[in-house]
Every structure is written in structure tokens, then in C-alpha cells.
Image (cartoon, protein in one colour):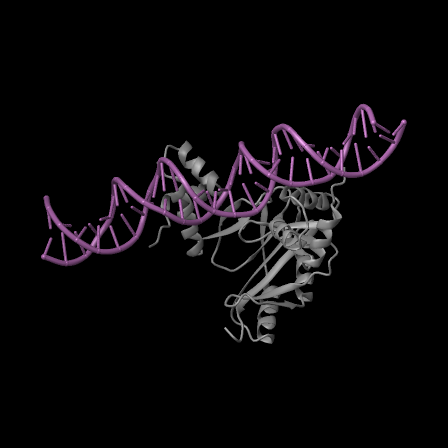
Length: 121
Length: 121
DNA sequence: ATTGATAATGAAAATCATTTTCATTTACGC
DNA sequence: GCGTAAATGAAAATGATTTTCATTATCAAT
């Protein structure tokens, strides 16, 4: 019953542990892998069930799948050129943990992103 | 240019300050108000621009619009029931500011959300 | 009141991610 | 080989949201 297709997992890893179903599909196509979009969705769903990946939502509502246990980082995104810088987020981790505990939430994750204009833009 | 339809705002208030566009539309229909779905979307979008309502996402990706005070805050969202708690984010504000400065970014904003399971779920 | 410009409206069509259907193929135990 | 259950994927369906575009309301200036 496990449809956790290893090829899909591998692509997600190579994508930096962060991608939408559509992106995973496009990546595999570009690499010449033969796979259907349906299978990508099913594999990702299965990985979520197995708690190997986390599902979250982008601002536009598209689902993005993130490897669990990924030492996760945050992004500084430039609104001008779209460039991103990975940044350290210790303060955020702590904040999320404290806030969740304070309200009795469990099984918590978080997202945090900073956007602005970089030096060049 | 302000399309912040007061009828839509009123419905959102009466809905407990929390509803999706589709729900607002259905509510207004039920109350015999004549309005188009498109207008509901535009009104809500306008209210978001005017920072009168907040937009966030349900687990299924549907956008929900929520009345908010002017104070910039963050959300603790339950993956189970969709309930949200407004939380204090001083630590995040500081973090965002420091990180942006460190990389020479200007005109910065940020998003930060914590999600998990609340006590009841 | 009439005209004209501008903004608002909403029905219908388009878009796009995601899910479902279903016929076909693959894998595996016998 | 044979049969069965799982996996696959193309195509259709779904559902929220956006776009298009023709119509209507608003309102200031005459």
C-alpha cells in the first residue's frame, strides 16, 4: 500500500527539501524521468502519511512539501530580483516553541520568511 | 478605487469575523442580498489591501478572511479545526530586522505562522 | 436634467492546483 | 504460466479563484 515512490523522495531531497507537487513533476520531466502527475501527488501524499514529509501552504494556496527532520532554515527573499538567502532562525525556533506551549498546541511547525529589496535592487 | 463593499464587511463581522469568500457569498445569498461572487472576492481583496482584514489559509488551501486589529500580529493556526489564535511576535520582529540589516536588505516585511494541533484536536 | 467620464458590478469563461475515474500495466506468489 | 492485488497515468471532474467584458451606477460639470 506504500506508494512512497523513492524517485519522488529523491527529487524532493535534491530540490532542497522544499517543493510543490507541480515543481517536483516539472523537475522529473526535465530530468527525463517518466512519471505521471497523478503518481507524484500520490507519492507525496503517501510520504505525508508516513510522516516523512510535512505539508504546508504557500501564500497563493499551493501546497508545498517539506522533508521532515530537515534541519530547516528560513529565507530572505528579494522582491526585486527574486534572489534568496538562507538565514539562521534560532530566534524564530525558540519563539515558535514558546508560543505553541503557551497555548497548548502540539505537533507544531512553522514558517517564517523575510522579504525586501536587496542591495542590487 | 476602494471596492471595500460595506455589505461584505458587515457579513464578515456577523460571521464571527472569520469566513471564506464562498461562505460570505453563501451567507449573503441566504439573507437575500443580491451580490455576485466576483464582487465578494473583490471586496475581500480590497479589505485586505486596506489592512482591515487578514488573509490566511485553511488546511485544504481555501483562503479565509479574518477581521483584524491594526496591530501587526502573528497566528497560531490549528491544523485540525482551523482555529487561530493571535500571538505576540516581538521576537520575530527583532529577528527580521536584524537579519535584513545583516544582508543589506531594505523595505522589508515578513510573514511568520505557527501551525499545529490545538488542545481539542 | 443631460452629458460624459470613471468606477463598480456580475455572469460567464478561463485558470490552475488537486482529486477522481478507470482502463491498463506491473509485480509477485502460486 | 496464471491470477490477483497494487501501481500507474491519461483524461475528466472538481472547486476555488481570477479574468474578461458588457452593462450599470455614480457623480461632477455644464
